[in-house]
Length: 324
Image (tube, rainbow, N blue to C red; front, side):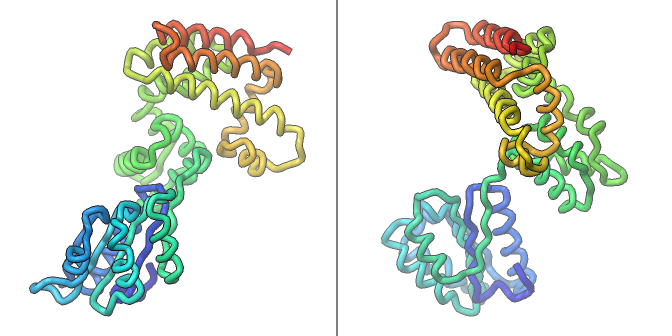
């Protein structure tokens, strides 16, 4: 939001990244509260609205002359209320600050398109791609008045996973425990190392690197601590496909950033792929992917022992490594 008062204005928040969408709405509410501290704040899910309740929510109360109204889950808005909501958004009046939140997708797209035509203030919150997560971590650290370099951010993503809320919470915890507000690899490994050692991607990394004992040991530990078998096959498949794309694209004339974007990984991951590529060829990657596809079907019900199927898949992946 800019410095103009939110009252008499409408914020349209769109996109599936719920953490960013919630923050955008919260910033709008905070700005409205700063502009008019006496304003009443109402939050309502669109699916709960009818003509009467929308008018009541937007109309203020006996105790407040101004209203901040946040309507979430816009995709669930009843069709019979759409005209009334669009009319309200086109002319909210000087005593209403209105935030409308749509999570993306085709549900409720008709009313979303009508709202976009009003040229409202729009905040897009698209899904954060996996290769963008280290940038998200670094940005989160800056937002909290801290610092995180690319390597530390990447290690944190590997340890915690792709959920932005979990990553944001981890960044806050690490910075709060750092006297100089610096997120370091050592701190990440100290706080999340045990978790990182049993992630599906750690199993996949050992398998592609040919570390048989490490891959099987981490696989058994991961399964014993509740990691879903399908996450293991997914990690193996993702790592193999990234390696295959790297082998296909490394000889093309493009910079690291463009190559990483083409593969679908963060730039710092290219060093790992370069290391793995010394012992893999496209044909061996293809055979390993086929073996993992069979295991994936097995852990989804085609086999009675998912753990055994995964062990065989890991061994087959390691066996494919180095074939020319």
